[in-house]
Amino acid sequence: MASNHPIKSRFTNLKVSNSLPNLSAEPSNLSPNCNPSFDLKTSLSAAVKVSRASRSSVDLCNGGGGVSGPKIVRGDHGYVLEDVPHLLDYIPDLPSYPNPLQDNPAYSVVKQYFVNVDDTVAQKIVVHKSSPRGTHFRRSGPRQKVYFESDEVHACIVTCGGLCPGLNTVIREIVCGLYHMYGVTKVLGIQGGYKGFYARNTIDLTPKSVNDIHKRGGTILGSSRGGHDTAKIVDSIEDRGINQVYIIGGDGTQKGASVIYEEIERRGLKVAVAGIPKTIDNDIAVIDKSFGFDTAVEEAQRAINAAHVEAESVENGIGVVKLMGRYSGFIAMHATLASRDVDCCLIPESPFYLEGPGGLFEYMEKRLKEQGHMVLVVAEGAGQDLIAESLRSMNQEDASGNKLLLDVGLWLSQKIKDHFAKRSRMPITLKYIDPTYMIRAVPSNASDNVYCTLLAHSAIHGAMAGYTGFTIGSVNGRHAYIPFHRITEKQNKVVITDRMWARLLSSTNQPSFLNSQTIEDSKKEEPPTQLLDGENYNENGSLDARESQLI
Ligand SMILES: Nc1ncnc2c1ncn2[C@@H]1O[C@H](COP(=O)(O)OP(=O)(O)O)[C@@H](O)[C@H]1O
Ligand SMILES: O=P(O)(O)OC[C@H]1O[C@](O)(COP(=O)(O)O)[C@@H](O)[C@@H]1O
Ligand SMILES: [Mg+2]
Figure 1 (cartoon, rainbow, N blue to C red):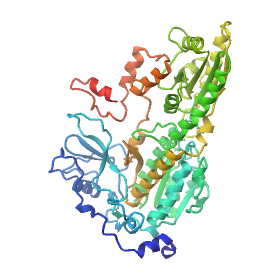
Figure 2: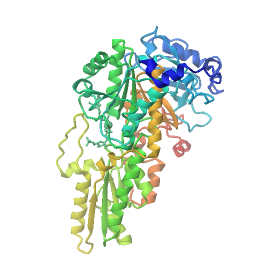
Figure 3: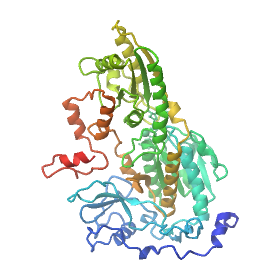
Figure 4: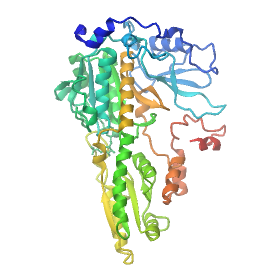
């Protein structure tokens, strides 16, 4: 099999390039602040080899994630590495092999292709001189040593949850990356989400079969909600001899991936589990941005533009556009900021009200008088409390346990029509546009395609290097391996006391609808990823004013 593989046979005929760095000879990347007596490299390998229950020179903390708990390594000056599991943690005698990439002509010219073993990525990059160094994640990328031989790898890919632009690109790049970088030829596609592991046939994925799929929306593998049966899924992985599992999906999917990893570890299987985070809502914590988000914002603007054209063309024209965002209004906020045609943006994080002084209707009347038309963008999760007051909430859930939302777009459009019907001197024409599924179904744009490629490659490098139980993500522009629990413990939300929301308010001139209670509640919420773990609080425990300006 291996000898038939064109890349592999090409590799074996090549000499090892001398220009490749000897990793062990690489200088440490630790900051000069770090205590020189603390050798992170040694400590990290100890962390990997020693059981996570043991504690020695480094403080390895247990509890709350994975069978053996999170791998936390503490250094000096408040340095914390939230590490990801490695196959060596529970299979200590696993052999390693030289990375076949060292013989790959495409990469041999790269000066320092392999990442340093002690490279980590800081979660917080806005600092001041007394800041603790804070949380770090293991930097992603190719390692000199791998724990799988190319012939041995039997990978599978599954896509779960709602659609998102870029799914096919990630699938393509996992298949092509495994083949071209590591000479892996056996990649299975699991059809129809998690339940496909035990209820559907699989398909063989080859560079040829996935060649054009990045130009299509959706996922060639299909997707689903619900149907996560850990035991059946891991049985299927074991029965099929799969040893690398690539799981593409949102927060729910990553929770599912986490329990799959735990079960695999419990059974002691040599199977690497890698998550690639997907969500059009951009609500996954820690990472800078999820793939497909840029595409969604771009596509959302077409709908906003159409609403604006319609509204402008008639007297007192109102365009209402509903965008996705179940619990977070990132698409609505970014599309509004990008478009500049929007007069009001409503998101789940910012409660609003319709009637009375400072309410939506008062603002709409003012706006119509001023400019004769207006555009309103509403995220699907906005105003759910208000709707529930007027319609009886059904509290229904989808197959994955996500709350089914009431249609805020239709509800709001009707409320606006009812309100202006009572104002005989201000007849309006309202056009409601709901482009949500059209936005999700488009292929990813150029920048998302590049991002998807990097995510796929980082996931492959991690799995080949024996890391497991991780989600790949961009943290402050650097790709890192993030433990599952950090991705799933909370959702990313628009912070309405942050400068970004202030920018939006000043660009639309809409009322903030904020009362002092809402502002206080919002301050209690954890600040965005730049400021964590109380680092922005002074000795008295209150928010440092200088720090809050930095967000
Ligand atoms: N807490 C959980 N534990 C295990 N599996 C889960 C969990 N939450 C969701 N899943 C599974 O993950 C898949 C996708 O979840 P869903 O919430 O629909 O989409 P997304 O991953 O995009 O958030 C579903 O198959 C669902 O059964
Ligand atoms: O109607 P569907 O397919 O269940 O999806 C609706 C939901 O999917 C999303 O696009 C994304 O949700 P997920 O990230 O959980 O898949 C939400 O914005 C929306 O509420
Ligand atoms: Mg979700």
